[in-house]
Image 1 (cartoon, rainbow, N blue to C red):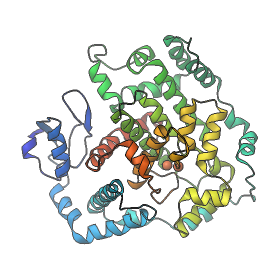
Image 2 (tube, helix red, strand yellow):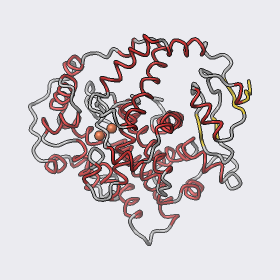
Image 3 (cartoon, rainbow, N blue to C red):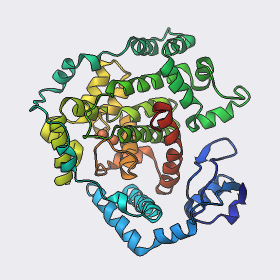
Image 4 (spheres, rainbow, N blue to C red):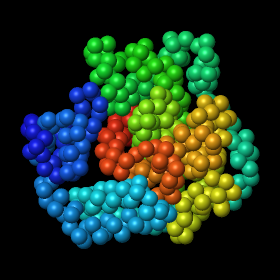
Length: 426
Ligand SMILES: [Fe+2]
Ligand SMILES: [Fe+2]
């Protein structure tokens, strides 16, 4: 394996192993293709040498092709369309746009431009089984009709109760989680992933090997944080019957997981103590869309077509066609489940964080969602980057030069968390 001094790195080099700082902080994932900015970023953290691939597909050639004016122009045109609703005079939006143009130019240079052509949405919708005409009514009526969705399995009800009971002991939540073997397995995989690499390194003396029991997981993450993660995981199995054709579920969960990882990183940057809350808020932010896709597949098809054809945001199309948007119904579902109110508000207000007095959590999810859509990391159906809310960006405190390393670090964690949730599909 080639160990390369930081001074000898060139843009286009590909990392062979994850890079961490001296204090264990995760910096960049293996597989990342380095730009000059990335190299400077690593230097800034005191990294002196890294392992790089010596057999990567001629990275210099890919770098040259990515810089080709024709490739840049193609990437720029595509990104301009996706940023149609965004005010790019905002510095954060301009930085996000530049990052997306560069990333897309790299993808085109490495893979060709075939992946840019998507089948027309109308064709996708036509392939769906015909449905009955649907009347949405009020959001509350919709949920009261779905008894299966509204009633959570016993184990999650009890975890939720324990989380909100100040008298509950640390061991109690671990015991409850332990009642569900598949939940325990998912949580242990997450706790052993790059998601917790920093905490794992810091606690090396305590956990010399893998965290292989819930009691160790609780010691590392904290029982209430593990309980919140369990509540997030519980939702996945509630939506395994979405009609095919409307949404690629793998892509939906990738979007959700990436948004959750970014939300957690943004929260960590602001030194918020409950990172798992932010992860779960990101994970669940668009679940209202799954309720739409399941109950109103025909109207959902219409919203997808309207958003694409009229170049409007899918959220706006939902308001017009359904009468309310996915954030309203998602927030309401979390309320029915009695989930912590911070989670409910993050989901309910992620497209309008200014609507609540304390905008912190919804604002973080809003920013994470905008970056996730912009980078095309999975999709919940939205094609256009949501209009960025300047106050939310100010609140998140992401400097333009931090965007690229932040996105890269999140990409490095996404596959592992996805594999923990869906081991058969990763
Ligand atoms: Fe959303
Ligand atoms: Fe989203």
